[in-house]
Length: 29
Image (cartoon, rainbow, N blue to C red; front, side, top):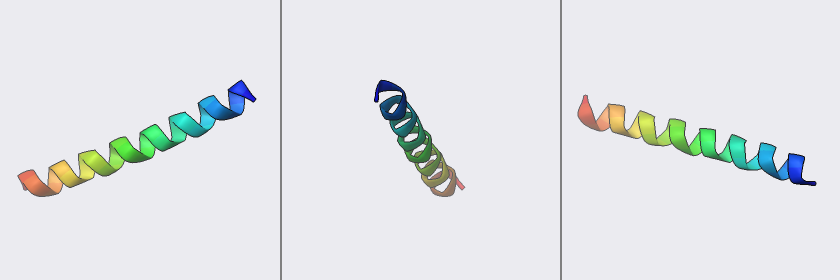
């Protein structure tokens, strides 16, 4: 249970981080 939650949270975090970084890159460029 905890392991699955950690994986889900980690994947969501990475997706959100990549999305934010991409948006920032586009804004700066």
